Amino acid sequence: MALINLRKISLGFGSPRLLEAIDLQIEKGERVCLVGRNGAGKSTLMRLISGEVQPDGGEISFAPGLKAAVLSQEIPKDLKGTVFDVITGGLGDVHGLMNEYHAAVAALEAGGEKALAEFERIHHELETKGAWLSTQQVETVISRLKLPADAEFSELSGGYKRRVLLGRALVAEPDLLLLDEPTNHLDLEAIDWIEEFLLGYRGTLLFVTHDRMLMQRLATRIIELDRGRLLNWQCDYGEYLKRKENLLNSEAQQNALFDKKLSEEEAWVRQGVKARRTRNEGRVRALLEMRRERSERRELEGSARIRSQETDISGKLVIEAKGIGFSYGDNDRPVIKDFSTVIIRGDKVGIMGANGSGKTTLLNLLLGKLEPTAGTVRLGTRLEVSYFDQLRAVLDEERTVQDNIADGNDQVIIDGRPRHVIGYLQDFLFTPDRARTPVKVLSGGERNRLLLAKLFARPSNLLVMDEPTNDLDIETLDLLEEIIAEYPGTVLLVSHDRTFLNNVVTSTMVFENNELNEYIGGYDDWLRQRQEAGDKGGKKARKEKSKKDRSVKLGFKEERELSDLPGRIEALESEQSALFSAVSDPGLYRQGGQKAAEVKARLDEVEAALKACYSRWEELQAIKDASTGA
Image (tube, rainbow, N blue to C red; front, side, top):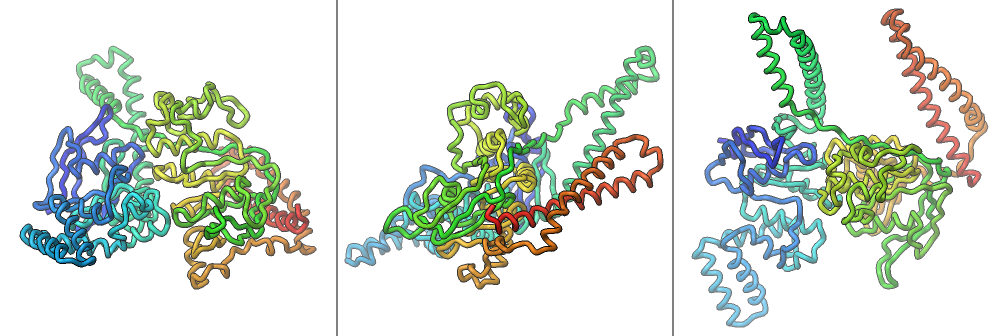
């Protein structure tokens, strides 16, 4: 028998409904990931299963004796007491008695007959109520999660608080564990820990996450909430992406055929007399049914349309740091010590490290907002900086969404042309009504989209992004990746999203083992290089584009190649322009399919050659500029 069985479940807080007669079964031992757009109803479905809300229609049944526990997305603000207190709260009725037992053990260690008598009393009461095994379970969970039992919960870091709440959920030994964004706001160390723990968990999991690497490693099945329907994908995340794309393409084709047929029938019925003939009454009824079906169709929600604005290019050198160090007090351990780097135009640098390690401090040093206590920082010329703040300090909570973007004006300037602020915000999935809403009522995902809208509303050549991926759905994450990858300027990016780092950055700066090191590539590249270096400081795995490498002078052949490249690029651009004109000319296709295919193939070759020429020119020019100090 399935642990959970949902039949024809419907629920809505308006129109359209979040859930439209959905069915779901979860079997013992499965690790099921629930995906869907922001606002699709994922958290609502989790609350339905946990019993927090009731459906408008349908039936939910559970296996006899099923025990379920929930790890919510947010950390409760009013939760107080020691780690032991919080974890025993997951045991319900014996919570108070368990706390008395823990205090009695501490008193017993101090000695005294009175303490011994109190310990024996509580021990006897635990045995009488059959709660002794629960005591052992709490101690086992605390040990397994490596938690400080007597530490105050309120004083722990966010990562440790999530660990404690996971222990609170696990202590009752649930058959089903419900996890809503378990890695949200955790650093890489905490994410790695919780991922390994869940991979070894023997119970059943239903979880929501936007962490694509966690999803790929953990999920044995994916279920998707899409426009009120629940779709089942019996595969991992990578295969789901392929099947989902095929499904959307098929759906688009079917809708196009349906709409064409409906248009033809609407044209027929307007002819009047022919439609009223008795023998055509069936066709009229079929048309009415098609109209009803079309009116009930729920279209796929639009995706955010994000693009950056270009400004004047910066100088080749963007930032140079020499032997910088920083500490917040004379007696404090330095946050950064003896670190040097050179960042040139077009670099996309990821910054990783545990929470509180100094990532934001490093950004402020590199941008000149903080003076280093040792060493120097030199900024390049013509820098236009746009800053994405993880604390959302740039948003005014009391003002509306549109006022935060346009400062009370009706228009914003995009690519040198005025555009109405409401239309601009619709690119970031804000409806006109939502655009007039105060920022203080926005969800986490909406706030991040607003920050992106504010970020890209101004031209820049240096993007600084501090945790931009929190609370974004997967579609918006994918789009943001494309924007950053194609961004012609320089990017400094702080993130704990491992997939995002792998797909975007060209190098990483990592706080590890009480020092700051630099590596080539993204998250997986860092893991590999750290392993190769024996994980002993990482100095041997410094990235290859060091200042020493950049200062190598061009040889005679390379100087000649650099001088010839502009002419080569100009010739390719002229040919590309001619080919574009050819493929847009209808006459080409009257010459036969083979001719059109040849022209398109040549266009692809020219575009590839142009890309290679631009890349080589950038490489050679960077070496020349560095050697001459430009």
